[in-house]
Length: 351
Image (tube, rainbow, N blue to C red; front, side, top):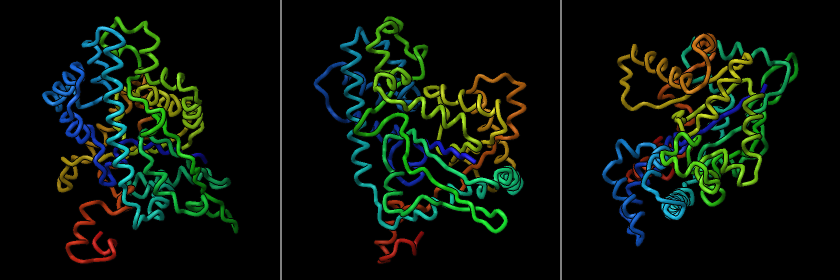
């Protein structure tokens, strides 16, 4: 059985890291630049954070209307990419690796179904049972620039994260510790862009190959000369279970949602989506199912699948909202402050 985990920015946020676009804007827009066009951009961000700039990548594609040519494009793109790189480097280097509970991370990778409703958990366990005769392998693809997952795994020994029983034999569940970063890293091949040229508002820039290789993600990967796109496609095409955590399923990565949709259509693969929503009151349980359905439909609407196919595969897409998945792997900054306040040497006492 091949299991694929796809991690978005929600993974880092879930660990208490300030990696939201808004967190970056708060710093970026306050820093002065001698370039008039860059300062115009920063002022525009400050005045339109809630709407226009809620998605940085799509907003940049739209903002290309302000560019007269590649010189303007380069000035803005280089400034915002290098600034974002520096911002995330600081977060990455200050990540608190003390008291990492890697065993919790392994358990969650091994049994994500534990965070679903009882009925859906039962269905995933039944589905996994069809692969009892073989070892299982889990791979991770990160949409994040940070190496937080690698830091969590840094001091772990071996690659076994679980096992299952076959007669008198235990078969291994193995984690591929080589994490793939489809958008690059904070300090290497960092890709910030859109899904395709339809998301670049300035049509006069469309024919410029230099610009295509700078903002259209698939072109960026090709220009980088690596095989990350092919590797990710292969992982999706071979996955029996796809788990998505902390992803918004936004338009700027639509190529991947379409690829996952194709896999679900052409196979009996299952998918689990984990999402967080601070506006849900658990007292109103009837709204939880409504939210799960909305999340499932949002993903399906990002695929190219016809309605008849969407209806067929929707029963194989499960959603967990506000679960403990990947929670308490590391102490959050606020937990550390509580521990300091009460004099607890062991952070685990206050988690």
